[in-house]
Image 1: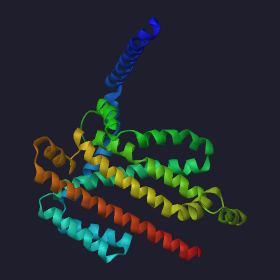
Image 2 (image 1 turned 90 degrees about the vertical axis):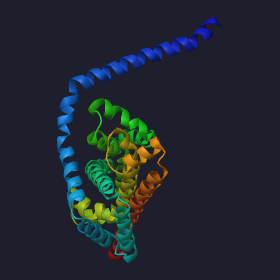
Image 3 (image 1 turned 180 degrees about the vertical axis):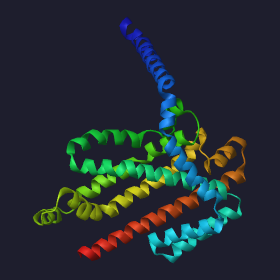
Image 4 (image 1 turned 135 degrees about the vertical axis):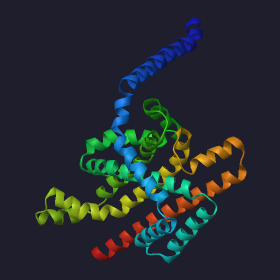
Length: 295
């Protein structure tokens, strides 16, 4: 009985010792390799600063026109284009243009990085079941981990600023594009793959000409989810210095500025709806195109 009474204290002592050891090791690693790690991410920071300057310093009619053209190319929907233009004009009218452009640039860079890392990994997972069994538990943890937890290691390693926030956003948003790429390729009809083999297609030709085109609608669904998660995480990452619409929201919460919080929150909702509708419409267009081609 006495042993059972001492068990909680023994457990807490062991946990405290383990925490001290892990925290100490992490601090030592940060002191030794923090600066080289920061320099390694300089190209990413330069890319982010370039896209941010491009959007914030370009004349607003040109920015609105380019975004509207992208919306039209992706959706072929007049309603979506009109909604996009009206949303951007309302954002500019209420003085939230610069913050919105910074948020859009962050989402753009995060999405590009997530696709550059996630698409190849998803393709490799579709080809090797062993890799899928290894990666899937990590993706499960990444998708269930509270978003605030992602901020802790990047801040300890890289401090506060745009790049740590960008890395946290990418880690949080990358699982959907990996999963959907893997799923889309695995769902391709095996009869089509056998036909490609019968015509003597190489592995690369089969992947680039058959599997990836047919998996595109599913992959686009993953891209849509990655964009939405990026937007959600960008707002949270404002706590560690990421500029954009998240900072006014954080300021409004801290100082009880109701109007500021509501307006910037609505701007975030507007941007989210634009990204969601455009990416979904593009995915549906791809699906219809493939149905016509293979109908």
